[in-house]
Amino acid sequence: MTRVEKSTDVVTLTVHAVLDALIPLVEDLSRELPHTERYRRLLETLRTLFPGDAAALLRLEGDTLVPLAINGLSSDTLGRRFRVNDHPRFAQLLDQREPTRFAADSGLPDPYDGLVQGVEGNLEVHDCLGCPLYIDDRLWGLITLDALDPAQFDSIDLPSLQAYLSLAAATVSVVERIDTLARSSEEERRRAEAYRLASSQSRREMIGSSAPYKRLMDEIRVVANSDLTVLITGETGVGKELVANAIHALSPRAGKPMVSLNCAALPDTLVESELFGHVKGAFSGASTDRGGKFELADGGTLFLDEVGELSLGVQAKLLRVLQNGQLQRIGSDHEHKVDVRLIAATNRDLAAEVREGRFRADFYHRLSVYPLWSPPLRERGRDVLLLAGNFLEENRSRLGLLSLRLSSDAQTALLGYTWPGNVRELEHLIGRSALKALARHRERPRILTLTAADLALSEAGRAAMTSDAADADGHAQPGEDFRTAVASFERTLISEALARNERNWASTARELGMDRANLNRLARRLGLK
Image 1 (tube, one colour):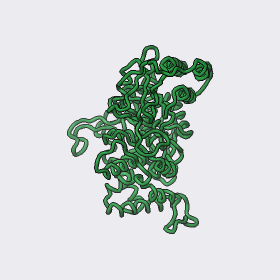
Image 2: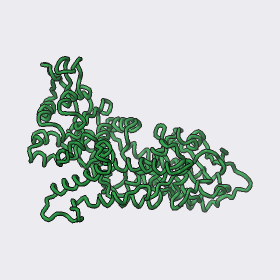
Image 3: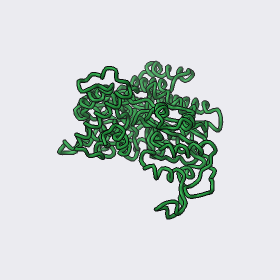
């Protein structure tokens, strides 16, 4: 690694050129602009002053660099999360106070190899320049500038670069101060800090920029500060648990535990014990006293996933706890008082379940005080590429690759697919495709590109397109109501998956991206078991 140094052969930019580029940024500091637009203009100016093939602005969050804006890199880069320990170039850039340029023949892997937009083939970045940003003497993040030409930055003008960095730091500082002013009370600041702490843990991060995603995040922020019971609805695989985590992290209960229970993963005989606990001798196998999920979540949040799978008896007992906060362990005569905020999730239409007598009306109304709908992936537009970028980076690290990227036809395939299994299906698809693509190489490649053929979405896509409940000839049955049509499609989809997996239910559940207990229950309802 060598630092950028002034030398006699440096071609100094004219004062007028620098001023013409920087003055608009100075004027922007006094304007009301969205953060994304400020950052976009910042990178546009960078590439005007110092032409290259790609630029990025990354914020340091704990041990991870998060891209906030990119210019010239593939769109999925915004969804990636770069752990500094996995990327030695980033680590060296962050260790320096001054701008750093890497030699073209540096042996350190470049995180952007294969990600430069519009470049096909395994072309690697050859000229790499990085500049740490400090706000109030605190390391905030990085600005990077990359080029495929190894001599691109030979004549870099250091005074102009330093002037740009000063304005970049001022721009970031303005954004930071606006964010601080927006938190007008100590309670709001405390909740924001709790959210950041929760985000730094191993839980998955919510990623997106589409209008449906932004509406969902607005709803989360509205309800988080209350103690209202929330019912999250949406299709299988949309990330309802992530929504519940976000609500808890932004709530006044963020410092207390969030306890989860998948109601479909346990038989009815054990659900009650898991929720309320039991005393020694209450039933066969109860050798000691044991607290339930409600007691574990006291002061915090209890998340009940697949709440539509609860039996009517358990619903009645839960209703009592929700009404007065009192519960009894199985086999005990003593009541416990608990303070728990309940968040529930389901992919069922509970209103229809109530009408058909499979769900208690009073429990349904108690759950749906604040209904929250999580949109399916097919309605989130280009969010699929941001999410794919996140999963690509996870698999790149897991497989020990320098770069794992999508070809342009793979991106087109992802955008054109209807995603019946939603985000979970996308996650499994990226992991499966990367593993299969890597296995086809005799020698481990430094850059692995997934093509549309690797994703193999065509056949699945055709199946998904028929989710309007088409019959064997591809036409909806005349007079068939929606619920019957959907059931018919589900039956066909499961039957075909069973056939492909030689009637192995565990393999079928994995292919469909479903919990095995949920698949078994659905199969029984559809008459397949």
